[in-house]
Length: 115
Length: 119
Image (cartoon, rainbow over all chains, first blue to last red; front, side, top):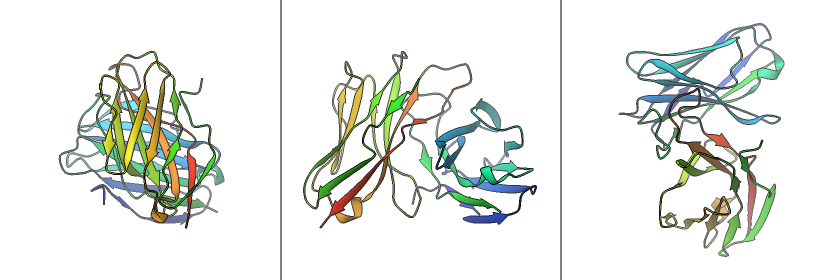
């Protein structure tokens, strides 16, 4: 158990819908990251928050947004869902902002299926 | 350009034998970290081992060791005494250390290697 929690574990929804994925980081970790894992794209970085502020952005679609709350939990919002958004979404957390040695610990993931 | 390359889509090993999973990387940043993660069929990503670019010695963690060859830009994972439970996908990842810009903390992953341990 990494100490990172994600809910829900599975999510099945229809095209055009909106969903929210939730993540609680390990105790003491200030950075939260979101990654998407799909068969064609592999593991892709989406976005990073540090202590409530957005600090880095990857290949995140405009239909996707995220935030980190004062209690440091984070939510990833996916809207106008398309079939291609079906993937495993991971949240990870680490202690620091920008140190190369800082290990990221991953949650169990949310498997999103868009029908 | 591909920053992390794992050239072995699949590897097979006999139980109790050692196996090496290859990883090469590309960066011009002098400060970086290299990480290996294991993803079993259940889907979770499990951190295994880490090597910093300035570390003088190869990292070891139980049955896992990292063969770090900086000049060759390779960071191969060695699993000794393989067990059936080691069957999984293994990912090599890099985190570059330059602060600023838009890449503060992101991990860049390779495509992964599926390891199958035979009894």
